[in-house]
Amino acid sequence: MSTLSNKSMNSTDSSVVPRSMPKEIIIFIAILIVFEILTLIGNGFVVYLVAVKRRLHTNTNWLVLSLAVSDLAVALAIIPSRIACFRHVCDVILMKILYDIFIFISLCNLCCLTLDRFIAVMRPLKYYSTITYSLVVKLIVASWFIPTIVFCIPLTWTYGYENDILLRKTADKIFYMTQIIIFMCVPCLVMFVAYAFILSMALKQAKRIQSLRQSVVGCDSNSNSYSAEAKNTIKVFGVVYMMFVFCWIMSAYRTIKTFYHEGGVHGEVTLTSRLLLVFNSCVNPIVYALWKKDIRSELKKLFKIRSRRDNRLTLDNRGPVNNSCDVTPTDDVSLSSNLNQKTADRQNSDLMPVESKLLNQQTNEEN
Picture 1 (cartoon, rainbow, N blue to C red):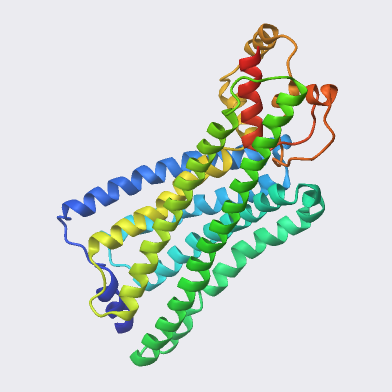
Picture 2 (picture 1 turned 60 degrees about the vertical axis):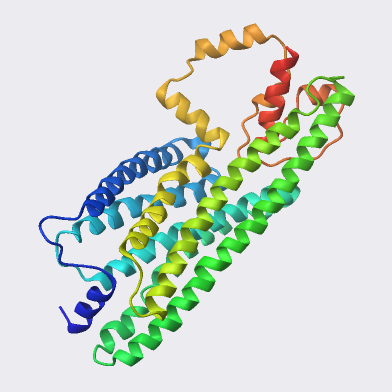
């Protein structure tokens, strides 16, 4: 191993670990193993369902599939290598590049999925003409290709100019500051703006549906139910976004501290930052896949949570009700139309998850 690599390892990580590992390292490894199992199970089910079930072969679900595969790559490549490097000598530079590639591939897929949801909510009538299959393929290819190329760039000066320490330090500072701005700050800002618009539209559509139901069906009870439903959605989005920002802010802080200040960061900060980034891959299938009604439905069928007999009994007990709540929104798109009593009972337009849940709750209360 080169002298430069040894210096890099000494400045960023301890590559040669003594036989008796510290307690915090043992805890860190145990948590990583738990995240490994959860990530494999969650994303594995998502990959299986989207790949096998033809009903899930939609443009949005292809983006979900790409996100799940990238999270699987985090579990299969990053976590085992990280654990191995606590016991064996590793090239930390190569390990960091591998780590960055898969973490930022997952981030790029997440941004593409956010773009898809933003257009579905804000431009529902233009969604199918905008988010085409060819565009989805291009987005997926770009999400995998761009991070792979970009984060291999440091290899040029790391191993091409081993003896020029000053050049390496200058190049690292420029590269990683650019990484923080483009791959951390910009996605956080873009996702904040996108979800702010999505939540604002969710509130407006929930209010509109409530007023339509009151005027058409004559339902006066629980007039504020849309508010409670919207608040629950805001809470979920808020927690997810705050976790996302917190994970990446800590990573940005660690990068700045490492390359712009002598002495680096505390080991506890480094371990916590890496755990949070891996945790993102663990919760992604729950938030962005299982939240979709079509995927949840297929998952229930897979585990036979609800049998066909139970479904028939439920329908018999409910009697003739509004079937708009039972429509499975493939892409969660809400279409505007003139509503009367008949279309209110047989609405076939795709609805956002907030609207679908709202109508389900109100229909059950009416019956």
